[in-house]
Image (cartoon, rainbow, N blue to C red; front, side):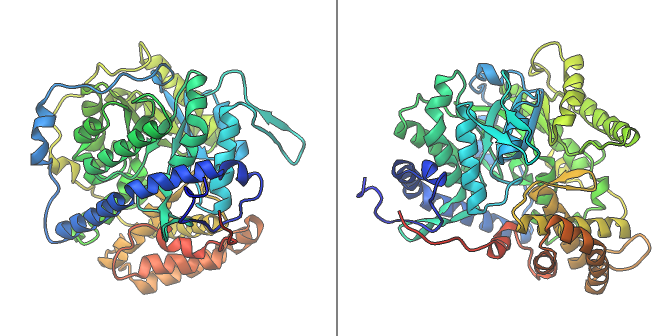
Amino acid sequence: MRAALEGIEIRGPVEEPFAEILTPEAVAFVAELARAFEEERQRLLAQRRERYARLAAGERPDFPSETQAIRAADWRVAPPPKDLRCRWVEITGPTDRKMVINALNSGAQVFMADFEDANVPTWTNMLYGQWNLREAVRRTIRYVAPDGREYRLAEETATLMVRPRGLHLNEPRMRVDGRPVAGALFDLGLFLFHNARELLARGSGPYLYLPKLEGYHEARFWNQVCEAAEDRLDLPRGAIRVSVLIEHILAAFEMEEILYALRERITALNLGRWDYIFSMIKVFAHDPAMVLPDRSRLTVPATPFLRAAAQRLVQVAHRRGAHAIGGMSAYIPRRDPAANERAFAEVRADKTWEVGMGFDGAWVAHPGLVPVVQEIFREALQGPDQRHRLPEGEVTPEMLLQVPEGPITEEGLRNNISVALQYLGAWLAGRGAVAIFNRMEDTATAEIARSQIWQWRHHGARLDDGRPVDGTLYRTLRDQEIAALEEASREEGLRLREAQDLLDLLVEAERFIPFLTEPGMAYLEEPVSSHV
């Protein structure tokens, strides 16, 4: 084992319970994946940058001509496993102990434990999350609240799925041969090493949600990683099942190819609407014709590019035998019955529209929404899904790129500034899923807020009252929102001044910064050094 650990450096503490996760064998497995796939990961990231440069030079996205034969052929993905046949409600959230228990007990069909957008990639969060999931899989997890209440798993629980980090993020506290390990391989590797065989023995399996894909080459990469993990852990081929988030505009043009690359193991496509909106701003950051109106107006039915993506996703997924999972209901129930009923009416309208489009299930961020969404799918569907349904009508490239009309308002700009400040302040304090204005915000929604401010400022957009969104207006409103948040900052432990510095960097950069997490990592606390 000593030879297998050569060249591996752990730059974070490894005391209990982390030592149960970072065993020499588990660390060696992650390192093996890193050595096998790091070069290809870097090639794919370079390919992303090259594609963005071509788009900035005037190229327009289209369905790939080189894969026309795949789109024309008759094929289907592998049928879903028994515990993923019905997916009416999927609850998502970070991997902290109480959340894991409550989500698994929520009554949802699936719990997506999130190492990505709803988490903050501190060493403590990542490793406690792995430890919590290890205990949840073995049903030994328990949590005692400060008031003495004890939380344990119910007899029946949701099916567990895990979302690792996207390909762009590193795990800086583990280095192999002098290079940081991909966060994706760190998260995936530790979860599979500790839980894959245990899950299979319990009649389920190692199920993953794959984020941030930008095309089918990346889907092929993930499939190769899963195959290598199956071989190394002596798992049956196809034991690792995956769902893919279509949360990037470029991936929307390659849905069938993504399914084909993962056809032995993929079970669903999911329309990740918040990251999808963010991707429209990021991909077309150079183009003033792609400036979007206030975020509050970007609902799926009312936004042409989202509506087209939803239609195409259901068509493609169902034609190939996969589930189509709809978007997130981020509302957080309150103690005000009237406010709740108004919000629940919006949720019902949203999910009723998705059912009508042919979706087989949807996401929620809070257990209180599970019965609301569950009822909609139970009443509308005659069976566990509606994969037999194909929405009519062709979706063209032009439809996928059509932006909505609508105003940019001071209220919308203020909301983006406040949400970004509050979220970044909480994120820097270690919390990745944050209740703001009665909605659950995560990195994806914060990305929309900060990127819209950048887009409006960069392109000199005007508010509906005629004022330009420039640096002066941004800083004036930012200072006012900072002042309004001072008391909450003290009460909630927000790192508000550092959040201001980070937001200024993101908003005032001359070139669009692709992910807020990349500069954000520099603000997180430095880990304590140690070595395997």
